[in-house]
Image 1 (cartoon, rainbow, N blue to C red):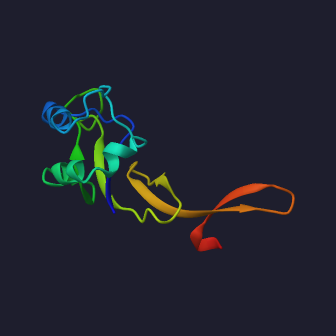
Image 2 (tube, rainbow, N blue to C red):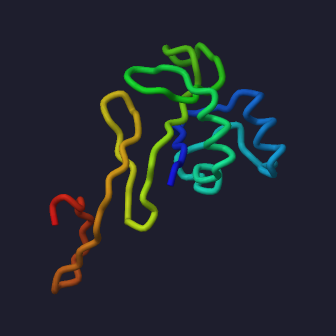
Length: 122
C-alpha cells in the first residue's frame, strides 16, 4: 500500500492545508509528522502529494512550506513509500533523514525477554 511519510519538522504549504481541510482533516497542528497514520495512508493525500513531487537528493519528495529556518530552504518533506501493512514494520532513516521501511518481527525468549529483530535476521 502506498503511504506518504512526513519529516518530523514538516510544515505544510497553504495549498496542502486547504486540500486536507477540503477532505475532512480540519483539526491539524501546523506540523504533520511520521506518526499521523490516517493522513499517511489516505490515498487521496498520497495522490495529491505524488502529483507535486520535486527532486531532492536521489528521489522525488513533496516539499514542505518555504522557509529559511532550515538550510535547505523548506520545512521538511513527504516521502512516498510502498508499505506491506500485513507485516510488522518500523521506520528507520538514512544519512539524509529519508525514511526507510524495515520489516521486523518480535521475539520473546523463555525468560520473557522481548526483542525486535529485522525480518532478514530470523
